[in-house]
Length: 330
Ligand code: KG4
Ligand code: ZN
Image (cartoon, rainbow, N blue to C red):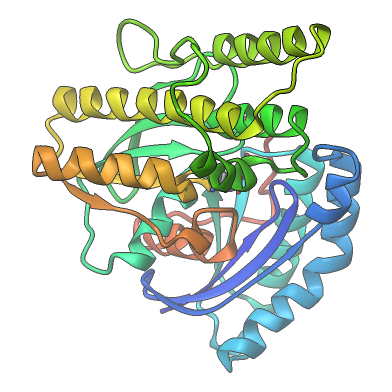
């Protein structure tokens, strides 16, 4: 069964064809990120406008790259929530029109569930149940994935997401937006113990708060500037990354213990972070837990993950109609 996945929740306009939820046939991503970088973050109006311009050609290219036509597509899956409302609406309306005009079933997919489903593409034998850690620009959450479409939130951030925290400090130390990937590289050149920073792991339970570590790092940078002291940016990147990775790893260990899960999936843009991947690999090796990660290229927003999630939603009998609406909230 071939699913066309369409994604437009933030600044990526993406479309992909996936067979049986596991086999990638094509994966096309058009992005307005370079233009957004001029403003140091995503400007929702610009994102929406670029989605309108890119979406038709992006979907066409996804079909072309797979050597298929719309007649080969068994269902259209589209992200309907959560995201920037004007951006999500573009994908939803395009998908509705495409499905209606071609009499193809339509499936509405949750963006976070789609991030988790990216792991099915890279790990063909991965099956639920498992624990999922979703770390992205908008989310830092633990999910108990009992079955393909039975996914429960069991903990998460009380304020910012890990990706937002990386992007914020990245911007302050002069990295282009989004700073996550650049900080990842820079952190290898610094001393992870150079700065004393508070942990984003809250004392009890599976929750995080990133506002404290962000403020402490900003205070350090402002203090150094006032004293006209040079800042070693690599030390900042290394210390900040180490503290965040350590918190994510500790809480993951706790979540594995509390849920009794023997498989861990990580997903979302920040799951591409090489320090986090290495730390979770070490944790899982120590605990004898299987770690299933999407390949790094499938961690960020893409249409393939939407098609993979859409396949399992379709099998579960979920169908959307032309009344489908977009939602900014989860
Ligand atoms: O999942 P995603 O593409 O979009 C959302 O759903 O939010 O995640 C984007 C986030 C950005 O904050 C970006 O800086 C971060 O993922 N990111 C990284 C890395 N690559 C992307 N953060 C840390 N290390 C990376 N290598
Ligand atoms: Zn995302």
